[in-house]
Image (cartoon, rainbow, N blue to C red; front, top):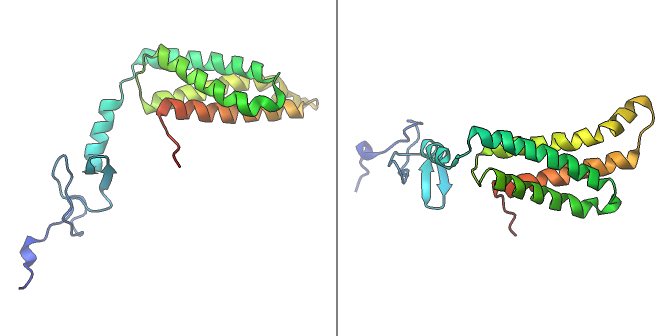
Length: 173
């Protein structure tokens, strides 16, 4: 039997690419570059983008309260870390998770990627305010090397665990 050339199908975004794959939501023909694997099958990028908007439930006040809480708790955590020395490696992630849980409680578990990023940035800025005297000491010649080191480790570990906890990123083996 000969192949029927007229029955070939092409991607709706890339008309030069032959495909037989369809979006499982809108039934558009999609090529492998346009396909996004979801738990329920392949979807086009437009459907995935539209579905993402449904999950963004944060309101304006969530940003205000979330940023304020994160900045304050990031600052207070940085004060605590001054006294723990080497244990900063263990305390910082716990502080990040604590900040995340406080923010989640304040915003009533509403979510948005930009909210998570804003809250994380606010916590980092709050922690940096505590490190400001040590950073200024670098400019004027009297600096505390270990103080800066512990602050840097605190900020990195706290911010990482805070963002991961808020966004729901899971590390699996």
